[in-house]
Length: 210
Image 1: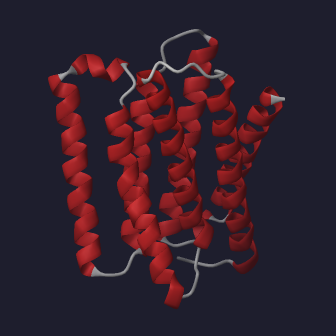
Image 2 (image 1 turned 45 degrees about the vertical axis):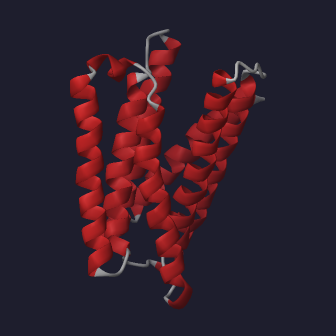
């Protein structure tokens, strides 16, 4: 059953990429940034899966995944959020956090081949904040591309909760079924891409440009 859901996740991810590129030319900068974000995430996940099938270490790709996600989504929210102070804050946060992570790997290069929980939270928390701010701004503004904000927010909160759960269970030496994380993770992925799929269908119907 898990393998079927995992395959369906890849299928809907691919469908989302194809559909986004089909409406790409008629869209504005924010949607184009989001399109390349989804494409980059798909390539990274495919790469990780191939290495896993080859029984090769793919932990370093988690750094590629979270840093790439942070850069693309920061750029996306920089575009859609209103307010010059907010935009300056996004630029400042992006450079500072990338500098911190870069220094960490220069200072401790062996960490590049390990799982980095600090990196996950540093790269995810700002996006959650940006998404929450954008949802708040849309309360009295047209809800344009609403799901492109709601999707990352739900996914990142769920994803960070899973990583925190796994970390706490490991630190407390509490054993739990190994497939629990796998099941919740694949459900999160599916829910995320279904939310995005709904928004992309709306783009095709309305030909909205943002």
